[in-house]
Image (spheres, rainbow, N blue to C red):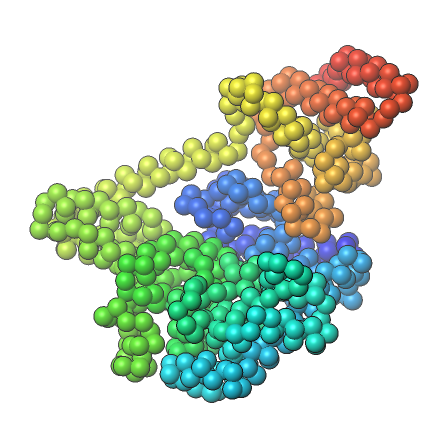
Length: 601
């Protein structure tokens, strides 16, 4: 652990999970839990559950789960130490000096070295741009009318055409080859030892995180080679699905919204024109993590994508993702299929600001896209258009918005507003029914499905079945101390074969043994690794079974036998001692006679 248990508990108690998650996604109360669209994967139906009682979250779609620490680690790509500090700051808690383990010290040191490598590389690229070798790159930027102060602010540079120019420079600066390789700035030679530079003969764009640390680079070619744009690969520092180009400046712009554009040069040209509230994704489609990141700094975004088929498609894909984070969305379409840079150079910043003021709501943008497909003079096409629009409106949460937009569509089509509202009502009823089905299937076990598996599939799932047996037992034990008391003498925590579940079992057994109740969030805090935290979270995020007591008793006995049999098999494979083998065979025979009375005792 990085901090004492007392500190962890205080940070945990002062950061309510529902409040924290609500800062990123829109939650709606259903029964004793809250539901919303999962920020960790793309979905249309809410399967992300937050339990205020347990202070746990769980997604029935992607199986992500955990407590408030895990959530922030996933959303912000923070280490555990960074997460504790973030949540402590949020709750105005002063932290003591952290106690780092050797492993953690090593990981933090690696990140520090990688940050220094990126910083040194950015300086080198910037120097190259001012040199004779960077003349072509400088001329390109001057041709795009990028001013010197803007080039300096964004740290623009040039990667030389030589194959291993940067690699040799970083070695000269004293960096270890291992860390140079981990930075993603070089790639192994196809033949022989050593590395060559990833970026060659490109204008370079340093990529900053929100704390102004350089975490990666983007490079644009200066000739006809492909790809035209290239980004750093995923590294310990760089995750393109969790970072946005320009956000380090946009978050402090103090504007009412943030503009989302397509590329580096769009960000730079708009910033230079006075629009400092502008960001771009990093060569990837817009993600839920991007939306959640933006929600930290604004309530409204304006999509400024190219007014062509690709730009329209990108906007349509981004709208539901941004909406799921609770953001108000507008769409700006530049006349004549120009990009923002060209439009500002031709018409000026004020004309562009006027376009922002006149940007369409995301709903009317979608309606206009649908309208372009149909001839409203044709009766059949008018019906299809109205049905498609009703489907768009049915997804809105605000009854006022539905009313206003329905009236506008009614005027445009001649179809009565009442008919449109009836169609919306019908579509919403269908969606609610589908949601109930999905939630029901997510919360309950489907035993008949298991029975339908073919024998060959069952064999293939043997390992998975052993894991599920361990997980199910821990789930039942954590929910019911009586079950723990009945089986603790028959199954020790050390017999859980999966190492993570074995550690969780030890913590659960110890909690009961010391007379303490099981607090899921505190159990999870004993696991510093995010993947392990997610794994342990699944123990606590399944609804209590509605299966009859007798069936539960039989299942427990079957699962205990499966786990103990697996332990015997492991020991059998690990020994050549004939007497030990005979003893294990006898244990296996006795195991078949084992039956624990859970109900009667």
